[in-house]
Image (cartoon, rainbow, N blue to C red; front, side, top):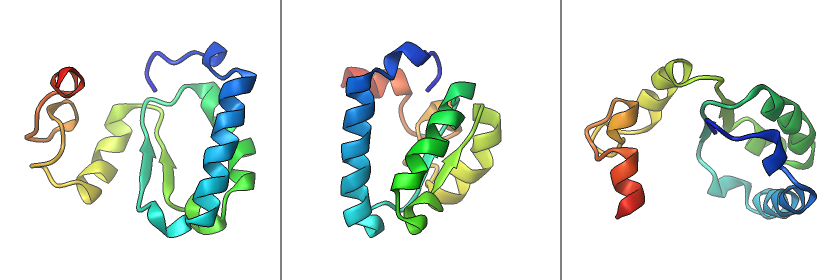
Length: 101
């Protein structure tokens, strides 16, 4: 979420997020782990509100990190180095390369 500003979270975006949350609540086992990295301060406040709409099992699967360094240990526990992009210590392509493919 690096570079994301609060202005992105418009009423329409929040409405879409609520719909996604409803879907996840119907299928809590679809999500294995969600790591939000480089989350700006305001995202924590948004998360406090959003998580009230989620199943408790789903909430436990979400980890929020304020910077990449804090997230690296958790990432290594969940994603094989061969599948992880170089930007996060893996052996895969860079994020920029993935975006352009």
